[in-house]
Image (cartoon, rainbow, N blue to C red; front, side, top):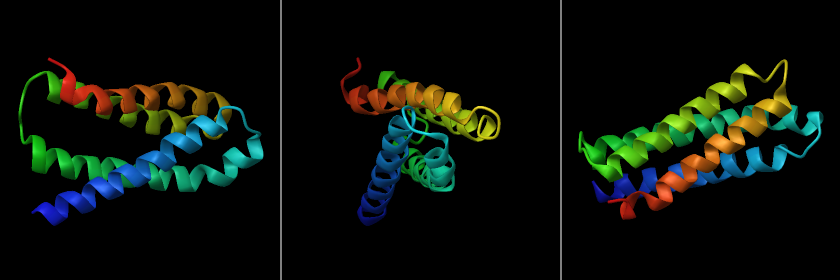
Length: 118
């Protein structure tokens, strides 16, 4: 099981870093680049969420408490961010990137601080 966890962590981290990093970069970019990166961003979002769900199932398994709640809040923000990016892509892509950037920043903070929340 350890190898599965390591693979899931690697996929989750790599996909998440691309998703968050590109989203933050695109908040100050032109519309052309936003459109070019949309598929790659959504692919990274799917991979990050899927790997995160796998990790949740293997490591959290119905646990309750501050750490699980913090991770759950981060996961919820990530799901909302993906929905915002996808939903606003056609009409207001830059606004969607900016909203998603805030939500994904909350997600990253939640993941980083979760072990220390009491």
